[in-house]
Length: 398
Image (cartoon, rainbow, N blue to C red):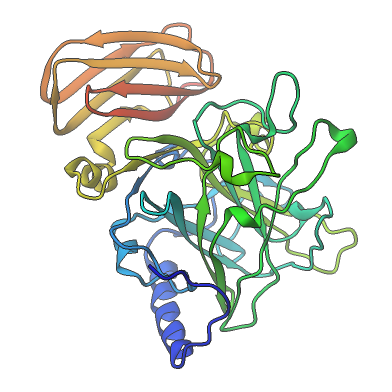
């Protein structure tokens, strides 16, 4: 399949882009995803576990996002306030965002479609400076093997490539125009004394950002690398993508509302997953709080169930307010056993129990005595599928 590279120069494409954008953004603004101010960490955990369905055909990366393959992917909000130096509620005309993700075994790439509205876009970053978070940028956090842990420098006990914090930096496109020249920053090195800022734009084979008014469409592909990544030989660490693979994934946006200040300073930091207050700005250095992304085949009936019914798996109440949490599976899955594990965010097993054969539906109450307030993982193995969900232990009764 031909790849899109370079500027849009197809005759008649400009009108198509405007029509598509208008319909997209009318839907985006009025579709009910944003109904008021952006909430300050409202505890919405349903967005932490995502599913990417394999693309039947590859999208044409043009900053439009009207390819039929995108219809099989669900929008996911970027709506959790991680840092706010202003009001605790961010008006939705200041920023709103959402994204879709797919994957391909043909190319071994992830594909993203992101829509953002930003009332003021601050650009002008010059690589390799270290202040890129103080500009308006999109961030993709990826942990290829969902191992969690720190990922700042290469040391005796840690690897910088244990996870990547891709800061996608662009100059604002002209109105009704595009840009396809990003810089993608993250930290590398062995210590703050020899810190470097590589440009990881090569990890994004195709990237186009279009703008109409204050509305932006970011469309791009991304190659996934393992923790053996070496900047001198990036191809050696490219990961083969297969159905059933689970990765850590979060999306975020750095928002600066004052282009005239000196020095520039980020005003808001908005993410796609819930994190506790003490972890508001941890993603760049620690992958423990990343959401999960599971790759599934398009043709699988389980894939459709994942997408439209969240796999029929419910964890409630979430946050957990006492020592009990309920698991409910309502789907066509069947098997001899269900194995339930509860893990801390550093993957320490806190609970494990094997439940015997079930048919169609499965409901259990799990007693978790001694669980302190915080964020945890619950892993459910149904025999033919493994699902990972986040849940929180509340600090108080609600």
